[in-house]
Length: 408
Image (tube, rainbow, N blue to C red; front, top):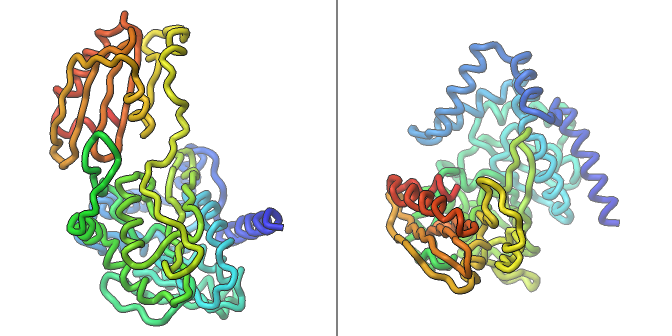
C-alpha cells in the first residue's frame, strides 16, 4: 500500500538522519544551547562571519564554497545540519518516493551527501552520483559513503558554473541548488492590477543569468536521458520567482509529471513555505501536465461585507485584513466603492506600487498592490477612518522602496 511505503521511507530516513548525528530540535533556545556546547566563542564568531560573507556574495562563489567547507568538519555537522532536520525529512522523503525505476541518478549540489547516501541506500541496484563544488563537503561525503558500504555511490567535486558534466542520467535531483539568489525578487507582473507576466524573452534570459539558473540548468538538461525525469525544489514559492523558474524548465522541454507540491517545514521555530517540488519529464511524454502560472490559493475566505457589519469592533484591529493574493479579488468585490485618495508610482527597485483608500458600502478600506505580487486589503468601520488616512500617508510619504515593508 502507498501509505505503508511512505511510512517506511519516513522511518528509514529518521534512522538515517540519526546515524549522521542529526536531531529534531523543538526550540531556538535548545538549539543555541547545543551550539554553545559544541563550538567555542571563536568558532561561533567565525561561522557568523562566513554566513555574512555568503549572504553578501561579493566575490562570487568563493564565499559560499568557504562556508560549506567550514561546515563540513565532522565535529560541526550534527549541531549545524540539525537546523535543517525538517527540510531533510520533508524533502528527502518526497524525493525518495520518486526513485522507483531509476538506474542512473545524479544528485546536484549534494553537499556532504546527507540525502544522497539515503537515496543510494534506498536503490542499491542503481548507480548514484553526487556532485558539489565544496571540496571539504565531497571529502566527507566520500568518507560517509564508505562507512555505509555504498558501492553504488560516488561523489565528484564539480562546479556546474565552471566545469563540464559528463554522463547521462535517467533521474536528476536538484534541490536548493539552481536558484541560489535568494534576495532576487524575480520577474515583475505587467501591471499591479493583475498577476499576468508577458512572455518577455530578454527579461527571462536576464533573470536566468543574474540568478545563475540558466547556466546550471543547461548542462543538467543535456545530461538527462531521453526518457529521464528531473526533480526540482527551489526557494521559489513567491510567484515572481516561480513563474520564471517554470518558464526556464519549459524552455528546455520539461513539464510536470504530477501536480507541483508546495512544502511547509520548520527550521527550528521558523516556518518555511518553500518549493514547489516539481517532478518533471520531457514534453514528448504522454502524461505531462501544463504549467500553471496562476497565484497559489492562499486559503483566505471570500470577503462578505454584510457579515463584517456584525463583527464586533476591536481596538486597533481591523474588521478585515488580508495580505494574500486573494486580497485583490476581495478589493474588486467591494460594493459601491468610492476612492478618496490614490497614488501609483514606480519604486526604486523597478516595481510599480499602487495605494488607495476609500469608502465601500458604509465601510472604509485601504488597498495596496505592487507588481511583485504583494497585496494588502484592510477594512474598518467609518468611525476609525482617520486611522486609514494616517496609514495611507505613511505609505505614500515613505521612501520609494518603502512599500515593501508596508506590504511585508
